Image (cartoon, rainbow, N blue to C red; front, top):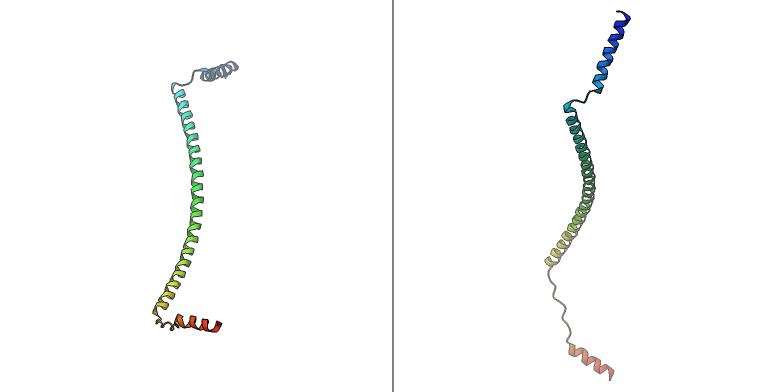
Length: 121
């Protein structure tokens, strides 16, 4: 190849490259860019919503953990109260099972007052 042919080849290639860059974009290029922009915005919105839900989920998880601790304490307190109630119930049953002793006879009230009057005179 001669030098002139090489220069012509370079000019032709450069012309095609320049035309490709200077031509208007493809007809579907703007629509595709709009779709990309819409999807990017939708992705950002979904990311924000996901972060919000994640923070709410962490709050609910913390509340659940607190409720588990309180429930555990409540269960142990209830078990202790049940044991105390069972003991009290057994004590009442034992007291009910005892024979009732007759109360001692009381002295009459008139004799006591009569003695008091005679001792003071």
